[in-house]
Length: 306
Image (tube, rainbow, N blue to C red; front, side, top):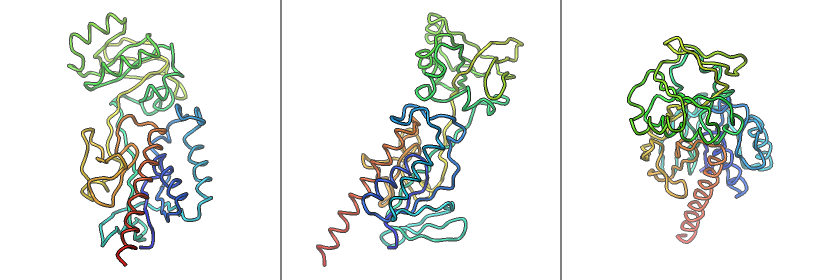
């Protein structure tokens, strides 16, 4: 084989895996087409030594560090398909290139769908977020809202309450998202609740000031959190036949191995939740160790059979 490992995805999981494998003297091709999901995010939080640094800066530093390891090759081309061949895989790209590799790591991440709220994209990543652990501190004690259209509405609201009790829950026209017992709990916490649809978000430069509902009422809010729907950013896992876990991500064992021999997964596409950069980076390191362990065993077996 020409290359030991192909890593598809240049987020924290893929980048950290490339670092660990490069340091293990493995030949790696890293496919990163520079369209990260967290590009909308201005700051990455909860990442030790990088708290508050932009995702773009973390990527820049990561690529700078990877340059120390000549066996790591970066490709900005997008992988269009992968198939098993012999004891490895052949990857094809949109530009028509082919790469033969021994192992394949899928670190393709997720894509998110936001609630159906007008102009929500103007505020998402600036004053509306999906993860309280990532951005709750910056919004602490401010008047906040939670927009959640599913059965996790109460759980997310209770979580956000940890950062600010000045809170309303909006189900954006959806009913049956909160049961009677949960509604009583919200009232005891003095958390507002509305099932009215959001008709307008008011603010400037991504900073939320108020929200209007379809009954004409208005609530002054400085920001909040939304429940998003996650989906796999790539179909490579399903095309290769990888089994899924209970969350809908790619199933892996403790070292990142999927149900398909030679295919590994790391990061958000395997874990789904919590979708945090620091956790994805750790997953990438774990999978890299799993890959190198398997290669060492395979190489040892081939030597002993000679």
